[in-house]
Image 1 (cartoon, rainbow, N blue to C red):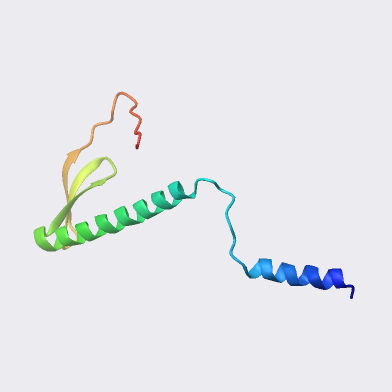
Image 2 (image 1 turned 90 degrees about the vertical axis):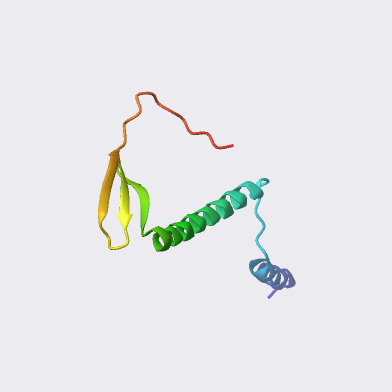
Length: 93
């Protein structure tokens, strides 16, 4: 084998096992969003579990209804949600 081929193979092996760098300039927004979503989901799940233990029920939204979900699995309808007549846009800062 020519020397250039050996060098090329050795270099490609080093690149393949090395760290992959992203070309994205703005990585922190993606990571922050992902971490925030994971933390929020975990927090809501823990809060729902604790509320169920303490109160014996959780108030949640299912479809068009606000319902009370009890520990034994029964669901009690509290009120029906009204559809908005105006289109609202949610903007997160």
